[in-house]
Image (tube, rainbow, N blue to C red):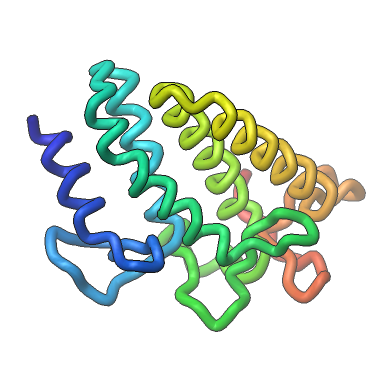
Length: 173
């Protein structure tokens, strides 16, 4: 099946650090951390539509390494991903008006979903303890996004926080 082939090809490009190029089918220098999260979501959706447990078990170690790589962006004080580390910035959207650097609301919303997707994959793969740990991590991300990125005065989430300061940019929500 085409989706099975695609998933295997994507994960086959995984580097030692767990990252993957943003495009394929061969290795290249294009990289966006948010694209990795979509790959985990695709594997989960594939399982939900097919019930192919064998493919999940085959690719789950790769998905775990993706998450380990994403965690290199994490600020351990609040659990949020912070792209402000002289690294490739996330793509997130074509718009240049969205602040993509720092502790981005969009990036961390994707991260929360990715943690939950990987938790589901761990459950499908028979690893409930790992699933519970991922769900707890996702809950911390939600708590931190609400505490740090929500502008209570204006009742809206700001695009990002950099160096501890909530930025004024607000994307359409």
